[in-house]
Image (tube, rainbow, N blue to C red; front, side, top):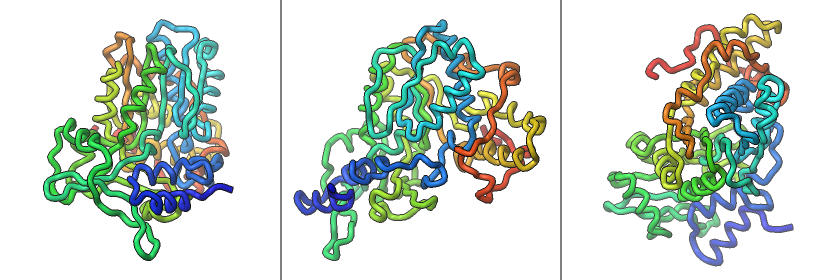
Length: 388
């Protein structure tokens, strides 16, 4: 057997000295012998967090509705490729393809769906269609930094004399870190800590190579740069998830807990522009799902021939998708490449269109939020936060 992620990290530090946090995170998440994302976590009940596709199938069904609109906006090409990056368990792919196959003919005959795992994989190139990702960029390894005496220093990972992992500062491992902050035009006060994701440029290039003409939909938790690096987040945004609990040190449970950092959407937009991906809209997930018709479906839930308990279970999950303090606060970035489409409103259906389509109901392979003790009153919630 090969070394565990923790043993691999300790070995690298012993041989070469402190390593960047990006290297630490890469090993912890993607090491072939026990990295967090290389282990089997297909059962939603055994994951350390849940995502929008696993909360309720309406999420993926509404994405499917938008994919059909995108297909029509491109004059119904055959084939229309959908490439999902970071597909994970494949639940979103399953729910999208099922909904398209059952309810969106003739689009079903044109759609070719590809999934690419978070850890990598072969992807098609030069296609017409859409690239999708949900909670992918926040799992890219990040460098950590601190502003000290008016300049940027990097936070590295080391081992103290007692054998415990610790953070130590040093000269930046690459000038790209300071260059990123300079491009963003940020002047941060001393003591500020944060993360810089240098993989965004590489990701944008890869997506642009996939899409010859079409759209990109990126769903993730993050902010534009001024908000991401604001005083409210002056200690950084690094988060860990272990057994449904967030907030432990990244140096615990190595390979057994998820590690993420909030996404810098300003850089995602800028790097996209550099490779031909033009932004159409950046909105919250709550607004996105509302514009796709979630409220229309939620209002019809009472009319479904299901038990009161199933009504409550589905209502709880739908509410969770648009909770501004949770999944509803995620951002959705829509970009286009060589489509000549400038009005993002053309990518959303009319209420009448959504009313004609059935909303899928919860299945056993979705996270049982209602059974988990969550409560919700679907009839009294605003799908959009009041300030949207």
